[in-house]
Image 1 (cartoon, rainbow, N blue to C red):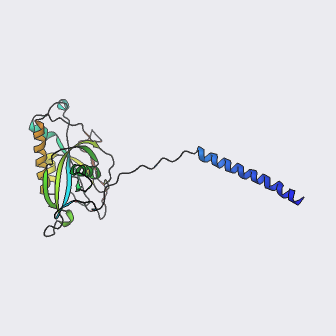
Image 2 (cartoon, rainbow, N blue to C red; image 1 turned 90 degrees about the horizontal axis):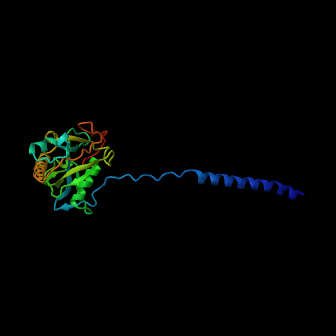
Image 3 (cartoon, one colour; image 1 turned 180 degrees about the vertical axis):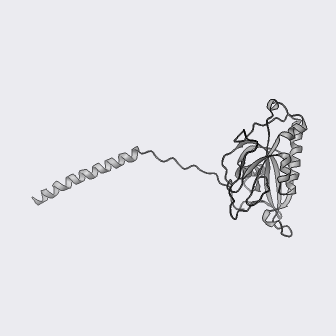
Length: 246
């Protein structure tokens, strides 16, 4: 009698356990699965793959630009030199705790071509993509920001700059917390440049575009996020301890 009494309680308990398992397993199957996390592109860090030439750290960068559309002339050939320069705007970026501006640039690494390095820096620092010129604007010798006052060749860089015709302006980019961006007319850019070599690069950009104007240079569709604004600018909060690459 005692054994049968125990079985009478055990059997209902087993039934309840099985019902609970069925209920929760079906509920898990019905629940929508969480979407996979988006892979956020990150800027390269460190200098393990950095290229050097003797005592010089090799740097690649670009001057992002666009030629503003001009009403009726937006689809026509821009043959007049002054007209090309009037419509020319360049994209400059800010760095923490400085009021002047620079162009995107950074270390040229050993797993990429010099052009790929320039495009990567434009994406990481300025959030733009576009068509890179096949010929560099030139090469310049300068010192990194942290070594400006050092003697000798410590911190010396050899930089190659290209022209980048912007076709895409991204809403977010890897280094937007330390680099704001601003479209400015090319003549205004001269007064905002941090270093003299940057002004020389602007001269070379104008020369290259004027030469191309003879080959039917056309206005490019505006890549601005807000086409109604004359300038598009994003200024990030100041990042403590941030140091801009040369």
